[in-house]
Image: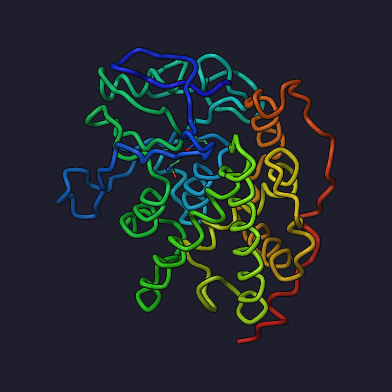
Amino acid sequence: MGLGILQDGKWISRREQEDSEGKFIRPSTTFRDWITADGSSGFKAEAGRYHLYISWACPWACRTAIMRQLKGLQDVIGLSVVAAEIHQNSWEFKDEPGAIPDTVNHTDYLWQLYLKAQPDYTGRVTVPVLWDKQKGTIVNNESREIIRMFDTQFEEFAKQDADFYPDDLQKVVDETIDAIYQPINNGVYRAGFATSQSAYDQAVTELFDALDDWEKVLAKQRYLCGNKVTEADWCMFTTLFRFDAVYYVHFKCNIRRIVDYPHLWNYLKELYQMPGVKETCNLDHIKRHYYISHPNVNPHQIVPKGPIINFDEPHNREQVFTG
Ligand SMILES: N[C@@H](CCC(=O)N[C@@H](CS)C(=O)NCC(=O)O)C(=O)O
């Protein structure tokens, strides 16, 4: 298993991640500070102060990369991208297409960055990581909170005038992000990392019940929360984008593909085709990461050739939902 953990500041290259019933457990993240526009939190939104570490493979990290693009924050928040594959040292900085080295802390492995922030750190070493160059520490490593900060606290610097947390929808955006997390975003992992039939059955049933429900919603409205694209759509997008290429096969989420759902598929293409989004969609990193990095799921680490999916195929969401 390529997934390790830091224990009292020491890297251990293997860890258990399921409970006694074979259910996958995702522990909560530990660095939870907030950047604010006025600096009242101790972390002021400033140009050039923060650096984002991501993986193109990771659906959580890609949410933050998408928000950085959509808000036009590329010149304000720097970016490093780990290599696609996880081996003994987990996330690694390496010279390969799509990767960007750690130009700020010059580390080779992401766990070294966690130790710079906290030398006795115990816990998982995950992407995304938002780093503060001024204080030399991790501000936050929870994707949902990082996208909220990019969306709402960097107005002074954002080159794009877009708001994905509009005043009139804030409650429903938060509820929707909550609603899709366990059955869908984490649901694919609960299915794929289950080590008992019953844990898998439960996860996959909840996943497809939820997808079926959202298919019905998207038949009636353009986006998850109504007629505006919100943070909730970007939280959904990164899971849907990986679904047919990875989760359907590797994680055995194979009741239906996304392309079999007329509305979810049409919706997925619309989001993918929005300016700036496809720059964050790297199927080579995604496929190599999943199929190679979980040898307990795919022991021979063979990466499938397909499927062939044309995310650029026209959608017609604007004709279905006029006004
Ligand atoms: N709650 C976190 C989850 C992040 C997460 O689990 N990232 C995965 C990649 S998809 C990771 O880095 N895993 C490495 C590990 O678990 O050791 C978030 O949404 O930011």
